[in-house]
Length: 128
Length: 328
Ligand SMILES: [Fe+2]
Ligand SMILES: [Fe+2]
Image (cartoon, rainbow over all chains, first blue to last red; front, side, top):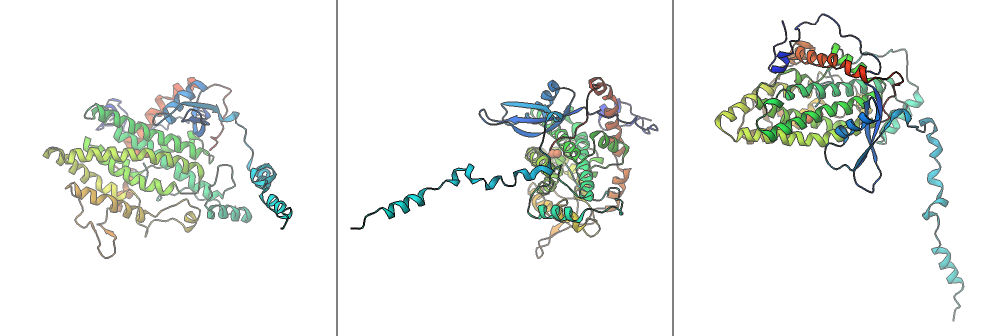
């Protein structure tokens, strides 16, 4: 007995009702390698990381990225890169950024001269 | 698409292993502050386990859910509807892809997830074990099943796990097209000829029970712990989601002059709570455990695709390939 379906294509496939055999185990990397996808929506912007996919090589990764991340709304370009090739700062090292917000000598906001000028002017104004 | 998965529990953890209390406190404080958890952060084993189970089953629901609708692509009435249905089905498969990637970041390979789907170890949403008998069924599915899924997915997109939330945000944008497309099809039938009205009413009658099952058993019997709520894994209770669904969609169904096959369905004017007959939770249990009208067919078709596509992937594989989990 094969599966009788409302979908004629399934019926035609003649799949046995009871499949006694277990499916052969799926080998490692059957789903191929991981790629990260970057999407450029507007000319002039930075590409933005939008997700990942699995592909056998960069050419097919681009093809699948176009289907998955560029099939609606606006796309100017897509980048893909093997996940393997991306280096990331580990979470254990995240504290190297802890003091960054304190470095106001690197920021415009670290330089306020208005007070000095006002004080200077007040000092040097000759009273009549 | 998604739903009613909270009833299937993952394997219990070894109770002898406990999480580091200091790390656990830090983790919980981060969630309490409204921050997201990212793949390389420390997380309790139970959090990881529950998320893998949940996201994986959500992914399976997307690709199995594409089967009853995909059946109708070749028979969709008219060119525009055929294009729209192809687009919707492609979106659902795309949702599966996004979700498998999110689950992978937690450490389970996609190969293992697919193997567990086919062996029956891992479940998918119960509604897809029912057939789409006519074109009107696809209209009801796209409108009301997707509507139920949106309620679930919007709630979950505010959860704590970054990759899952990001996937859901994109999924929800696409779901809004599915919902509008489904509503358009239902309205076309409901405002059409007597035969078309009859078709859509019959489809609604067939799908009402699975729709009531969609968000899972009532809170009184559904087991989900306070911990999963605190960790922002479980974002809304089954009953809350079902009430939200009834409140938003029953008036729209009635507005079209269609009826719901439950004489007891009504909104209690005093409490504002929707009341309804027992939606046959025994049937729900039976179907989820494998004895529904299409369980066997769904898995057999999935397995056939897996086996018949294997030589292609084999040919594409290169010996120097290395498995790396997706970044985020
Ligand atoms: Fe979906
Ligand atoms: Fe959908």
